[in-house]
Image 1: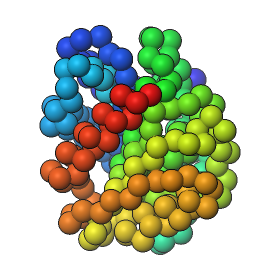
Image 2 (image 1 turned 90 degrees about the vertical axis):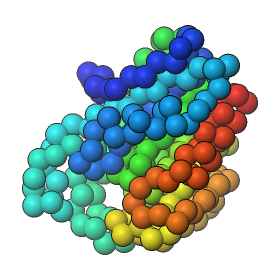
Image 3 (image 1 turned 60 degrees about the vertical axis):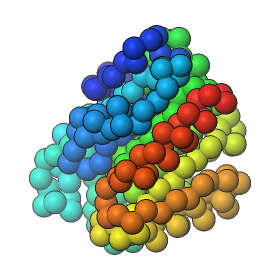
Image 4 (image 1 turned 45 degrees about the vertical axis):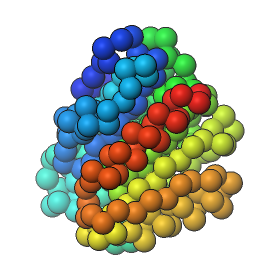
Length: 221
């Protein structure tokens, strides 16, 4: 498998941790690039950010239009019917990026997987099925699409999981964030769940919270 193309942002000092952050449907790796300086991470904790680009492929809910997409979505109801095989291929692509980071000298315990919306569904699959311990999983305005099929890895049974959602999200209803918490809790995880007065987006108070969470995850690993 060829590695996913990524936007890479290097810290001023040699990286000791990595965040792999997946964008949503129709976006690109540049979507969350501007958030990095706004996180105001301390210079004493140099973090590399990887923002992969999703492949171009047809999306059924958009009339078969070809666009950046991690997997096909067949319907937008609460059940979110999707192409799970394509999602697993995307998760494999994330695993390959993790392996490259390890080869570059970053311990798996200092690698965070993050995703927004469609990218968050891939992040769930990728992080929870990975066979080495990770630093954390951050799921933003998303849903746990493979909750009934994911092959959980014992290595990440105690993975820190941060779930954020907008209270008035018109694209991914907040109920889906609550359902993800319930599914994870039933599997023995202890996710944290935060809501914000926003729609399908990120907001300033959330960015500050993300910064603090990331620092705890990679500092304690």
